Image (cartoon, rainbow, N blue to C red; front, side, top):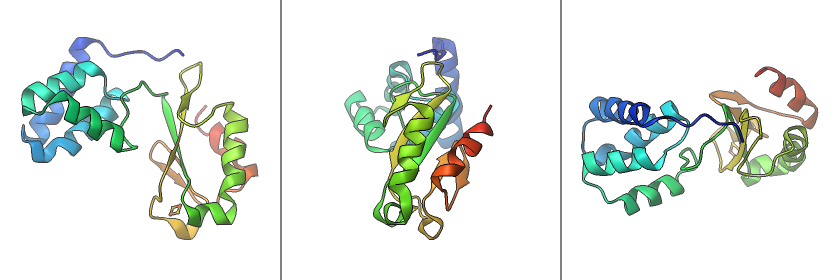
Length: 159
Ligand code: FES
């Protein structure tokens, strides 16, 4: 997989920016982790070490929070993250076929990142827009009422 990993300086700068913005308090842990994850594309061990140090939170706690929230990742992700809603309301209106079309088009399974580092494919629970299911989110773009045949056109927007 060709994913550029951030150097130590970049990691420290991203953590500092997030902590300066939210405050070095444990109540702001999720927003801090979210900001760092967004800036770096994931949460490298060095970032969790730095956050642990600044917020006086054990690293084990940070790892369990980072593993619990699907929007956070401790593994490098591709340049574009595709989230597919796997909850029942989307499933019953054709979600399974859309999921298969995504896996076919990308040649990826759940939680995989493409060899070229372009795509990461993940499943998520209800995104709160069930009325337009099936729902696919690419980065910050939400696509509703998706049909399997829409997938190539959606992916082509990120070329
Ligand atoms: S079930 Fe898919 S958005 Fe709610």
